[in-house]
Image 1 (tube, helix red, strand yellow):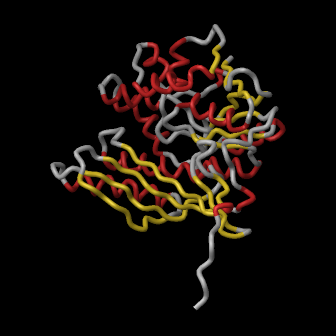
Image 2 (tube, rainbow, N blue to C red):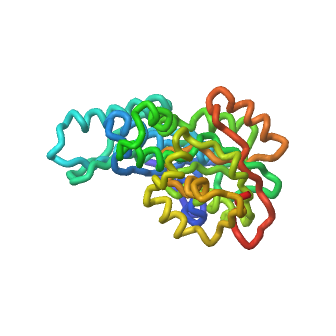
Length: 317
């Protein structure tokens, strides 16, 4: 019987040192595995839609590293006081989204808990030479965001019944959408760095890219795509607590031009669920990438550029 292969620590291509989206481990010269996990309490009332959004959010980390998901394990906590039909709908929503991604559910684990929580532990694959990280942005690169932001604000408003189901529908569609087609479009032109926009908001994740790359990133505030209703709600002060925590954590590393209104600043700190990819690409490739994204990511826009290192990580103009 042959000995099992050894996997030394130096084969870990991406770990936690730059706060990246997933870890990447080299299996061979042709294959690396991407591993990630994410789960959270319900962000919407519909259990099937909640399952879809949670699954899309977890799968996104694999796409942000340049790979494709292969299989996933369910992670679930559920109280015994709720009907099992709700549990089935959550799991079916997740299964449907994983199937759409071309991957499979291979099992999972559940516990009894007063607050429902659902997500996935996802494994994917990528060529070791084609891994994206959030730490490779180059001076002169342009930044392209593939989904509009503001889902934390619109979700907060929907829970409080401050917007109608029809007004909230675009946010549901964005949160449930996979980033697979965005990943394929970015891969076709190449990226120097990539991440996805989730709980730390646009500014939090952009800051991680800037710091990991040793650069400053300039964001064009009025080019950032926003979800319908997000700006109007922010102007009314409908801001989730997570946005204030994000600003408290990273606010010292961001400077705003004087003409950037406070509601727009708040949206940039807004924690996202299953947000889009943020890719740093060479200026010569940026408009080609936008063309490739037209059909699958109609809201994609160039929202910034990479500068040499300054005293702040992000400059919003």
